[in-house]
Image 1: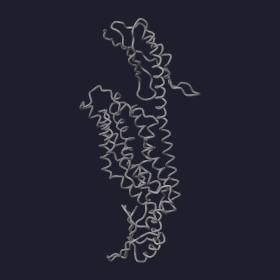
Image 2: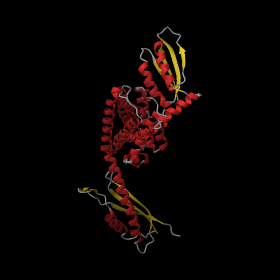
Image 3: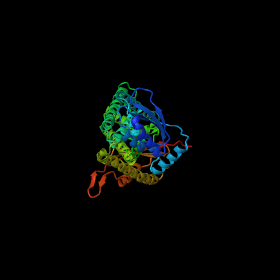
Length: 445
């Protein structure tokens, strides 16, 4: 619920009081003690769904220079008349009884966009902390970096600026998002170079072996679920007047770690890694903006002036279309990653069902299969099996003859590493994976 205070002149008091009486709203009229022309303050409580329609009526009357309307949160209102008013507006707004007014939405969106220097500082610190967590393979540190990142505000500002036809807020949101992405990548790159120069990470470390990094090198279509969910949750919590802190962490989860991976890829001279993570970031940014725009429009937010509503509607549709097209184009890469993951998983599954048969075919030797590892030539699509490492256990000095050849034959018959397009054929040739058998000699009893 909200407490509304309106500063009006004596000439306007009667019209405003008539509106409040007609709506059945309790109010208090306090005479102004100053020498200004505006002579009274009218205070009255409103249920949240009633704020926007009542303000729309008051705005048509309250036109004096220097007048104002203040809307603040109210904890409790004890009034039978208020309960009746609340029930009436909730019944008439069954679609969403917690929707805040457009004026409050605009103010909250502005407040969520911090000052430029603060935004830049927090984004930089968040990126450095995330990069540290990635290099340390620490999920806890990566999560901590998300709490710092102020990335929800600019995305919200972009959506609110669009639906309310406020070009200043829209441009500010787009600008801050762009600056935030560039600053995060720059900070991650410079920090990683510093780590390399000071040997804080041992020389020769394969960063792609770090799980926190490798899991973000090849993002699939499921990453879109995180971004869309974050965008919807952020916009919905804002329109309901709820806290956006936890939702901001969710938005940062879709953006900050991949930005750190981009910086690490640049610093380590791995352009494919940097490009792959960059695509993930851009897809997530587009998805978050689409979701936010969609929620604001679905909730019925429109410009104050009726004449601007048609323009805002066209602009919203146009921007949503642009974001959707960008998302579809960039999601093509995520689709390839998803297909590649399926292709390699299928290959490994078939391989794991065939190799035990090759091991069991070893006669005269007690061979026990311990592990099968498939090593690929690249961390991003299209991955080609480069080496198959089979670890077996045998008695001392009893290496089975021909085991490597038998496994190689079965691997060759099962390998389907070429990328096949229906109607086109293979656009990536298959490769022959090298088979290595590692023996672990068991102690004799």
